[in-house]
Amino acid sequence: MLSRIAESLFWIGRYVERADDTARILDVHTQRLVEDPWIDERRACHVLLALMGTPCALEEADTERVLSTLAFDRVAPSSIVGALSAARENARGAREVLSAEIWESLNVTHNALPQQRTMARRYGPHSLFRFVRERSAMVFGLADATMSRDESWLFLILGRSLERVDMTSRMLSTRVMAGDAAPSWTLVLRSTGAYEPYLRTYRGAVNSSRAAEFLLLDRLFPRSVFASLEQAEGCLAELERANVRVGTRVGVAGEAHRIVGRARTMLEFMGTDEVLAQLPARLDELQRTCSLASEAVTRRFFTEEAPQVWVPEGVA
Image (tube, rainbow, N blue to C red):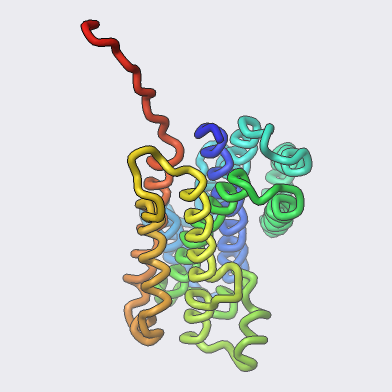
């Protein structure tokens, strides 16, 4: 597969997942501000912007700043609108390997964003968040239903998996590191779609340690950090088998595979109490893992090497 197309598929997966998860985080954030009259709005907004990688001064942090930065910005790929627009632009360059249904879904989503943005500013942002969650689920559902399990699908799912690890870590950070401005664990579970699976698993009231353990370590819930790392590792193993470079030994894991594998192994074999006791550090480490793995994937699969040119003897 051409590295250009592979890179487009990888970033489609990342951008669509980023829009979905950002919508979930903002939905919980705005709901909490409405329900809790005692919350310090500026501090909550300041912490959220910092955790999402767009910090600002405390006196400038408010709900309007949060929504304009993380929801409505048309250019920044860290915002909902920007991420979906970037996903659609990448899809334009990979239409030959995407099904017509996926392209149509991304295109319809992009064309509906101006109207959704206007409605969100007029009536409140929750309709936009619901729209984004539904359209993101449609894109990935169509990918599962209409794409062959070849390299195209592997790059798309690899991007989704790495982004999901990063964003689930950020969701947990909003609870662990926000102090008095933190959302409840029930809201965090709802924001990830994990509330009902959690109740079916533990059959009891929400407990902070169990909630964190579920979102980090559960092997069956697809949005958990462990399940996402495991899926990313599987995608990388398949891609490495299909893209063996000259001069490399078969069966040796690449750099991205090693980075993801170390993170997955740490969660799998470290004691649960030990993981939870150092949770802020572990969450930071997981976010760095995603960044390093993404850079390694780019170097391994997307950076084209200059072809070797054989020069006859005697020719300078």
